[in-house]
Length: 291
Image 1 (spheres, rainbow, N blue to C red):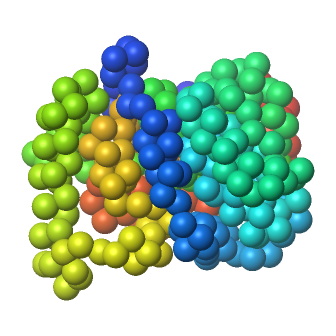
Image 2: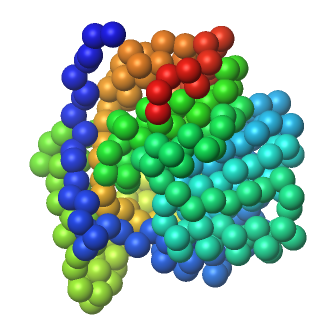
Image 3: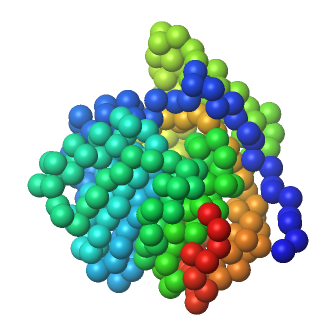
């Protein structure tokens, strides 16, 4: 097969001092999780995937974080089996805590491992629904992570991705790469000040869009897939490694490397946010490919 140069995706530093503590942020998120947030997470899955796509299916949550969407799939939406995985041990601990709160459902398994580890990925099997929302661009090797994730989709199954959009200009993606790189190594007091400034600017943006400057937690959760503004801001400023790609970059990559996939749905981001993708796999079993 001929090779195609990968579209630009900034290659971030991967030293231990330049990795955002995602698991710690999820622990704070979990400490204030409400039933309304769980409902909002379930609603977001149902809305993008469709009810019929979930019930009785095997759901693989790549980079499960807090475990919120695994909980929604396993407990609320009627999937037959959920397998959650994360490379961050503290995130895995969060997911296991949520599993305990859910009554330790037998259809939900949680594992610690990286999507970039070939042996680990080979042990996962395939799934009807492979879900990797806002995760692969934080691995330090986004295209490799995307390829390994896509190979986990069973024939006839779907791949639900969200990846940061690439934006040019002086305050585009490259600027935010430097912001995140600075933030993740900055002293605590500087991080606190940065969050205060960001939230102020976020409030101004809301007012300009005709919204309240500060949204009530349940209102924010309903609009943002069950998330919480406080932990989102910390993640937005510090989520590093950080890579990005335009929707066309991703579609071209998937078309070239996974010709059995067709695009079912695309929600393009306003600016720097995530583009949402839903692909369906047809006929060919890509387990035959090497991982």
